[in-house]
Length: 186
Image 1: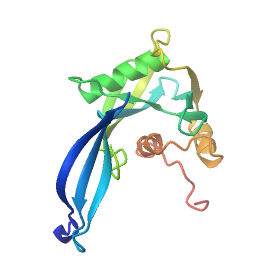
Image 2 (image 1 turned 90 degrees about the vertical axis):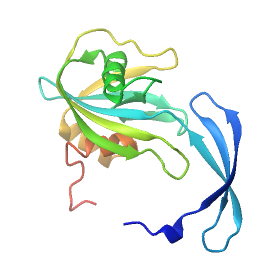
Image 3 (image 1 turned 180 degrees about the vertical axis):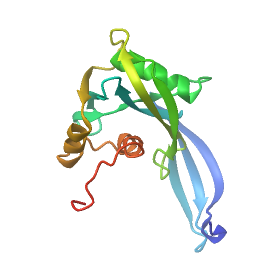
Image 4 (image 1 turned 135 degrees about the vertical axis):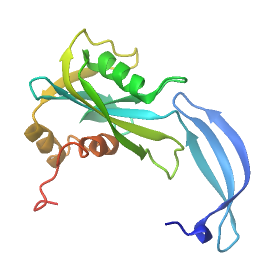
């Protein structure tokens, strides 16, 4: 159910600088109640993917990498960008293989989420891959340094609890497959 009285009206749009991962758009928006104008920023981006991958032995394939925004290392499931003209499932398979060397398995969609609808215009497609196996060496992009971790669900839950796994899109994907939080703790 939506309330159309909350809709803002776009008065104008102009391009901002194009950045490596985003195109910047400035929208002049009219408030639905006060009629005041506000300048809002939108970061246009291609869709993204996150993959919950489990090996034939039942381990969860996670990656550790440096994240520039928080200036620290994170533990998270594989994620990446859907290239122009690429289907989300193909991007998910490609990213898993490139970042970890794992592939194959049985794939299913876990749905989509809005990446950050306050400022982003894209979606994040969530995937589950069961029974993946190591089929090649990692081939990360030039701008990536990634370490693969095979973790049990208890280790993943511990990483959530102690703050090592805080990535919201990764948690969104993972929580569609596993219960990450004990209800008496949160």
